[in-house]
Image (cartoon, rainbow, N blue to C red; front, top):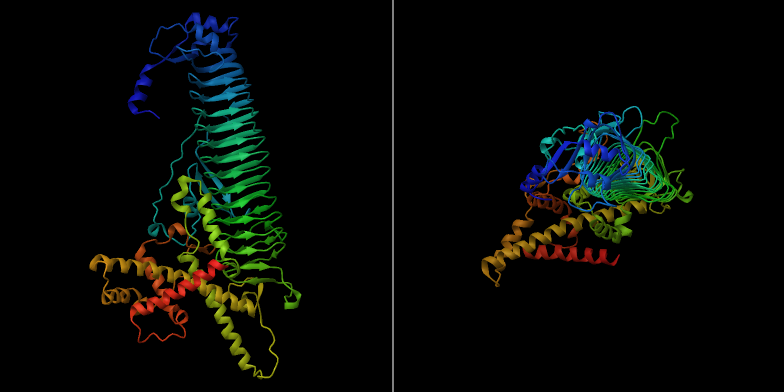
Length: 635
């Protein structure tokens, strides 16, 4: 934490020299009882003080005891202070080819080889701490998606973000040139020694191989840790077996967990009793008491109970996995060559079974109810509820879907989730991209697309009824829409006519809310501009002029909304990721104004606007916003 000048002075003050004959005799004597397998001339002693000829025999008697050395060694000693019972090298079976800085603690270990222990770092009561593979570096390859026959291999480094991983997977339908972020090829660094940094702790672990433990990080009572990098304040503890793992700041692997080929991002945690392999675990996410393999788990995702997650690609996370859930059932009996694409905020209910392949990327914040068995399908109905079908509906074994159920029946959940995600965002280094809002441009596009399909289905059903010549006095048979053959995006589910109408209403309400909130912001800005120009006395003519500019709907705005997702990357259909969305204010208002033009007849139905001034039209629109906001607050 000091300046470069301080570091230079410290370096100049350090002494590195061979041991004197008197110091060798002291180490071999009855006070130290140390041995050297080989020549003591290969051992260097280092200390701070600048006195090359200082006799270190008193310090060696206190700090170096009952240890066998081999190969080359840099042996650090603290001088000008009482080191008894604190720093030192004591009771070690063998230490070879290592650097032990002054002030470190290396005590009670069986074998230490090719290890650098920094000042105030400690290795205590461990078995072997060695280096076995010279190719160990700060970059590794993780196989995501299908377990065989076409997996998605990505290379991650210890400070990778979800942006980096999604970019390598080609997610988000965004080319590098159009992205807000600049990507550079990462140059990995070979790690040829174990490194235990200042204030890092390694203790009570039988097997350690190829590790880098940063300041304030710890390995405590693990079973085995190999090929792993721990950034500051991260930890591996309590009988865990870890191989090929990167832990970012404040990440944790705990209590009887087995982890391999995994990156645990900032403030994320694995354990207790978890089995995780080939996984990217996003910031602020938690996996407990279950299994997760070949999966990409986005930010703020929780699986706190016994569950199974296989080949799940969930880049935006923010969801929950209930007890007993089986995500990624290999139901075909063939090779596990399929995967599950999961939308933002998906809630997997208790005991649900998801049979691959499934794509819910265009159904964000949907709920799969308890006990549902979800067959292979693509679902594109946001904020929906999927539940087991009812025989009275003639379900034919299909699940029932209620589009927009969360918007219609539990808008409180959306408000609560916004507050919850903001409160639980502890990962500061990922905060620049994880704070997106739920109701945003891409989400509204999905709702528009889903509503359009629901409206089309109703129109087609009406035309079909007229063509069949159904009489006015005949009993009307309830309409059931089955699978995506009847409504694109419905998946392998059925929808009742009542559910279709409720879905249209739910989507229309959230679309209106989104564009009218934008109108309110623009109207407030226009009023403020008038006040700056005319003082407290606002000219109605000037205000009308400014509001007319806001709500005027030019012909060139009559373009189609961009698709919520497309297949430009040649793979699965991925929505535009939040960090790739254009957040420029003018663009967002143009998007909202385009929607407002389409929605105006519905918002202002039964109101004659031809003779109204812009101020009156805006007041009617904002009255409607007030009604929607009050309704949402009530529900």
